[in-house]
Length: 126
Image (cartoon, rainbow, N blue to C red; front, side):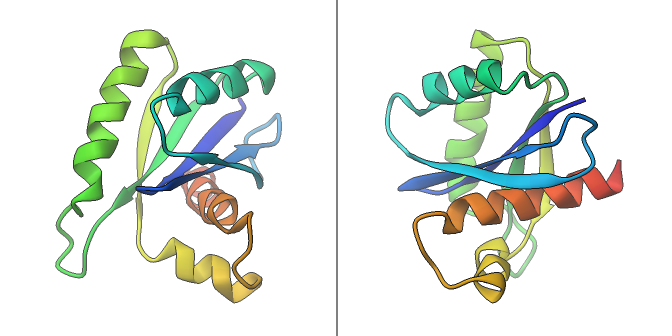
C-alpha cells in the first residue's frame, strides 16, 4: 500500500509519499495553502497511485491539546472525505519542523521533509 503524508501549515503544506510497499517515506513537494490545495492533493494522489490513504500530522501544543491549526485541518479533512474515497489517518506529531531542520537547513523542501517525518512515524507504527 502506498501512502501520502501531509504537514499542514497556514501558508504551506508539505507533502511526502511512501514507496510501493508502504515502508519508507520520501519528501515530495510543498503546496501553497490556498483554495486549490485539496484539488492539487487529489491529483497528486492519482498521479502517485496512493491506495493506502492520506496521513495528516495531528498538531498539539505543549499541554497536548490540539493547536489552533487543527480546526482548519479537520475542516479540510471533511472536505477531502466528501470528494474522495481515500482513507484518512491522523498521526500525532510534535515539532516535526524542528526535526526536519536537524537534517538539513530550512529551504523550499523543508515542509515536505516534515511531512516525510510524519509519514515515516505512521509507517513505522503499522
